[in-house]
Image (cartoon, rainbow, N blue to C red; front, side, top):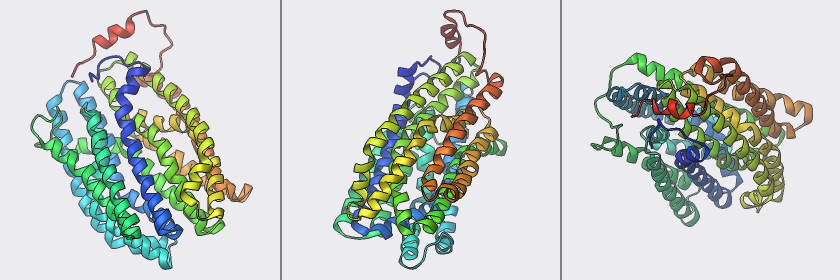
Amino acid sequence: MDMSQHLGARALLRFTAPSIAMMLFTSIYGVVDGLFVANFAGKTALAAITLIMPFIMILGTLGFMMGSGGSELISHTRGRGHGGLANRYFSMIVYVTLGTGIVLAAVGALTMRPVAQLLGASGQMLELCVLYGRILMVSLPAFMLQYAFQTFASTAGRPRLGLYVTVAAGMTNMALDLLFVGVFGWGVAGAAWATVASELIGGLVPLAWFARPNSSFLRLGRPVGDLAALGRVCVNGSSEMMAVVAISVVSIIYNLQLLRFMGPDGVAAYGVVMYVSMIFTAVFEGFCMGAAPLMSYQHGAANDTEKRSLMRTSLAILAITGAMMLLASQLLAHPLALIFAANDRGLMELTETALRIFSVAFLPMGVSMYGSSLFTALGNGLVSAALAAARTLGLEVGSVLLLPLLIGPAGIWAAIIVAETTAALAVGVLIRWLGPRYGLRDRRPFPAGQMKKSTSNALVP
């Protein structure tokens, strides 16, 4: 799709649909992983995976940072008409991501046991945490590449590539979950090896595709040795990395609070809530991932009219989607809890209650997530990172620590509502404050046809 053209709501949804579908499918096969563990390995195994997963996600955050920060740099460079340089930036980012992933995998394998102990694991849960985590280190570099390439696929104008690879990886994961966990009875180890296989497909297949001659206008080749540009990628992508780190830290705090107030059942219920919420939030993540290169391109082309149109259309889509998600999650809370915890009535009731409270946060969540994505696309990684950190590390951690003292254990589930609502309001304030600097706010009336004229003068890739 030509990024220089004007995109209304329908065209914007069509452009972002592959990214949304990609993230949805990624979430679905993650949920299937949890379903098999919960029903075939038991709630202790589910609690173990829930406990160690935040540490694994922290190790993989560099993939998020390189993907989002690199997408902004590449799209902005192309918008200015420097396609060759954008291609060399792309190669540099991919190689750095792969090399760093190998180093982090070794560090993760060596530190898995002490980290699991610090997170509160002991006895059988500790051994399951270590087993699951160390197996996943095999595919950590590919996992990091997978998330970077999901963004780069849209940046390269090939969003369906990311979707196809994700579907292949997901089908592999689900089939191997059925075989390893359901048939062979390998439990946590089986789920881990199924995930490893899917991540290898998700990371290495796009790597091979982009190495092919004439694969797209982005192709792996000779990188540019530009440390300043790499620093820009890291700074600008730090918001997405911070968001994942923050979510992981928040998950750790949640787990510690749940162990304190509810015991292992609380951690297992939180695992179910996270699996379910992954599906809903994947829509927001996929939309933001798909729309960001469009904003970066128009920013590089200095097309303020189209930037305003993209922002307003995106916010409207996300607000409507949030309302629909809230309604759906309330209707589906009981059957979802039943699917995961049918064999334990107490856990099922706890999970249903948690889902009903937690899901209220979907209403403002899309707007709060779009704020970080917007400022990353505009090249302001510091504001984006600050917004992401405040949304999770500040607001949500503070709420999950304070609310249980004020209203009891239910406050743990309600913490995210406070955090997301406050963050969405902050996004509105930041757009109003910084909007004129980026051409996002202009009170002057636009003559009829100005949008069309402005778009036609934009740089065409």
